[in-house]
Amino acid sequence: MERTTLDLWVGAFVIAGIVALTVLAFKVGNLSTYNMSQTYELQAYFNNIGGLKPDAAVRSAGVLVGRVKNITLDTQSYQAKVTMTIDKRYQFDTDTYAKVLTSGLLGEQYIGLSVGGSDQMLKPGDTIKHTESAMVLEDLIGKVINTISRHARRYSSRIQHSVGDAAHVAEETIDGQRAVKIFGGHADEDGWFEEA
Image (tube, rainbow, N blue to C red; front, side):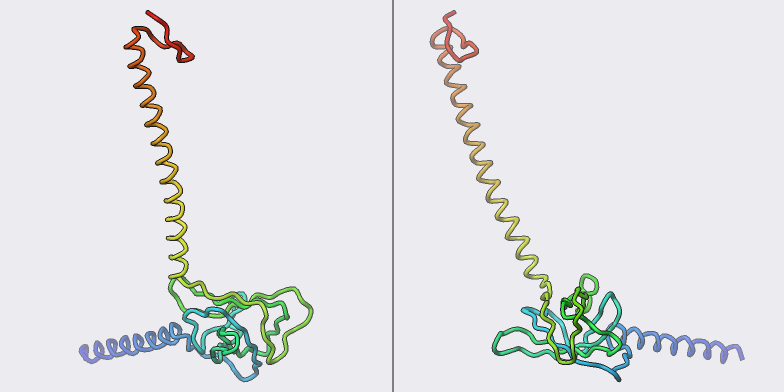
């Protein structure tokens, strides 16, 4: 009897673990349920979308308001055209900003919508005019390295100049001391030699 009860508890924990992993997989894969019954479409153009994928979240103030429907390359402007489906409960004005953002340091990418100040609302099929592309980690690292190397070159030339000035001063000082010894005197405050 005890063995059967133990097996039953182990089975229950295994099933609970499988359910928890499935829920976690849906959350990580951004596949959680979302009511798509009443939606409208908006477009936005970006110079770089990074790793944004179809079905990525569209959020405003952290709230899920839609999904990315599809991503294509516009052959005239060579920008990424992102089509989004937005829940009809949420209306955005014509000054809305669309940004490609990342949740966490290396998390999923999504579209963040920030409301502007216009009184006019976007209509289904409209294009969001104000966009900000994804921050690509490689580009950011390249800019930091470039800035550091530029500053390092500038400071190394200043150091070389300062070392050269110090060497010149030391050389003049050594020459001055030799002159004092040769003439048998010492230098006054203005550097003139006085006889001993």
